[in-house]
Length: 509
Image: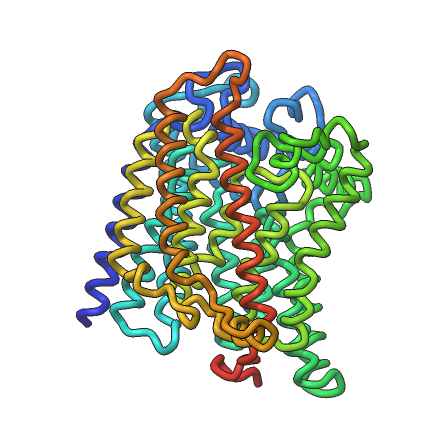
């Protein structure tokens, strides 16, 4: 009973921090003619409420796709429609066709913030609590502190409650977490259903799709494709097809409808780059003008090849040796590969990597906390543009203190704690005396955080040179990208040199 009291307090603190962040500015506040992502979400409510479904993704006099046209999957549109019905009941002016563009008021801001808060409370937060309660070989105190730290992760708070991303990340990430829970309990059908819903809410959840596919395929192969494995495979296929069919039902009337929705969801025509993102291509473009030297077609092919090759080893290992621990690490690796090398990556897509990192926070706290801090820092230019400097600094400091106190991160830097013991033993066969520079990692972490603090301070207080107006955003991207590349190597080492093969995990029946 005492543990549940502490868990309740942890959740209440998380909710309080969320609402406090929501009191700050948001994307595009008072900036016509396009405003920002806040207006995008309001506009989607306007479109879905006033137009029939077959017109939601098509350009028309009533639906100018150049003005925040809907470009997320059907489940997002249904969510917008549900919010629109509530908005229409409170104040029809909020979603009036055409005349509501750029609508801003204190009451409407409260309504929009409340929709995020409610979605978070119903979907994401319960998933976090249940996941942490599921953790095996973990003390009740560690379960509570895991919930506390995950709920305080500043990246998600600043995007959903500050910036107001044009999609509710807490919904898609929450559905993905419910899917992970389903697989953890061997409820594979329910897990697959939850993940299908996540993809149909946010197409970028495809970052996580390969680990789900490889893990479930590996389980089917273990059970045997002539017995229980075949039955499970059929059940999974039926579940996925049925879930997608139900979500896409209004758009199956014509082939043109399906093609147009897919074209809106995957706008490859926009090119390889999306603003200044801390991924491989944007960083490389600083030194070598890939954008100018290569045609869009070549850029697309290179992006595909780099992404495919970087995630292939982890996916093969997971398929051949499926385990829950391997599944979680492969989620991190694949999402990070997509973020670094994929086509049309947004800076906010790092949240898709941060979720699985939160899932292993209890296993490798030092590296996980390091990654989560860098992931938040990588979005600094976007957050400063939305006047969220103070909120960013305060939430990041709070998260750092909470994690340092909860996990004693500086005491968990041995080879074993970093999950690198198997790798070290392998290397020592060829290089006697080799050791992972575990103690040096503490120094590198401190230097990294000093650079983060310095770049943050300079970005806020120093005016960049006239000839280099994007100096600080570029430095933030380069610095963050370097970290992400090193993290990708680290997590792949854990995956490929893990010789437990699931023996310490829940048995796969």
